[in-house]
Amino acid sequence: MQAPSTSRRHAFKTLSVVAAAIWSTCASLPALAQDQVLNIYSARHYQTDEALYSNFTKQTGIKINRIDGKEDELLERLRNEGANTPADILITVDATRLEMADRAGLFRKIDSKVLNARIPANLRTDTWVAFSTRARVIAYNKRTIKREWVQTYDDLADPRLKNQLCVRSGAHPYNLSLGAAMIAHEGEARTEAWAKGLVANFARDPKGGDIDQLRAVAAGECGVTISNSYYVARLMRSNKPEDRKTMESLGLVWPNQQTWGTHINVSGAGIIKAAPHPEAALKFMEYLASDSAQIYFADGNNEWPAVANLKVDNPALKTMGTFKADALPVESLAKSIAAAQKAFDRAGWR
Image 1 (cartoon, rainbow, N blue to C red):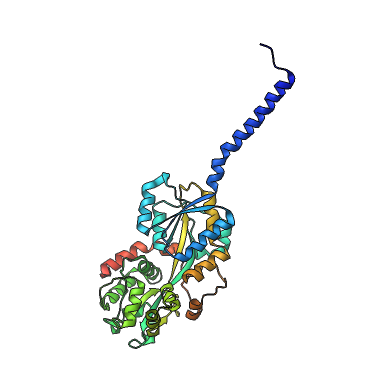
Image 2 (tube, one colour):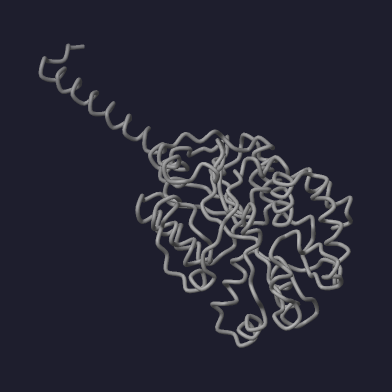
């Protein structure tokens, strides 16, 4: 066989180089495509959050795949999926649930100068970050309860409120977080005594959610309750006549203004340890701390931004006014959750 000419050998060499380049580019395409995807498990079920996700995609080009579910279901799913999970981020509400996920070993350590600079230290841990806050407030019936009777959480256990308290289950994370805060500030024994006082003042067995309690107080079934502030704000912003009537009957108190402040609950997120797209996940976490995302939390779901000194335009939050918030670190709060559950169980608050 005749040997190829010099020009033909050069042509073969050139084609080989081009082929190698094409193969290299093609081989990298799946990785590039993967970087443009983010898988989120979310226990936040608010329609207004849709703007958060769509705005992130517009800004970054990263497509979001989302699975919505109840908190316990998502945690169980993540445990079962283990290292094979497709999830990059878990978003949920309440320090209790975030801490449960962390203790299950689901979150990886977060290293972000952006988050450290934007989110106050008391609202983040090494593995999860709070992006919005809501307060645990006291609401009372203005016709039957005097405002000065309910200035603190301790006041709710006062015998003069016997048969006047409506409240949701003591096993609910919102109340467990409050109990954990009280343990951190006042000790376990005093918190258990407080819970026993609450049980003695029940107007009915615990049932329903916070809005159910607010409506029961307004209707006179009981005289006082505790509720997350964004439920109150939701009723304030409602156009439904029955919701407006409910708010006309209710007075609102920021508890413990002369002591450790009103208990703050959070909504937050963590990056899954086995996340297939960790870089995209961190971008999303940092995006949630941006001004635009923080305003979505405030205007869309009546929560306060985690970022300090951010101006929001929510009429309900403005009407509710300013207050002294408990500055207890969420990490400290999470450590007392189990003790709070035991104290409530012994007190009979179930």
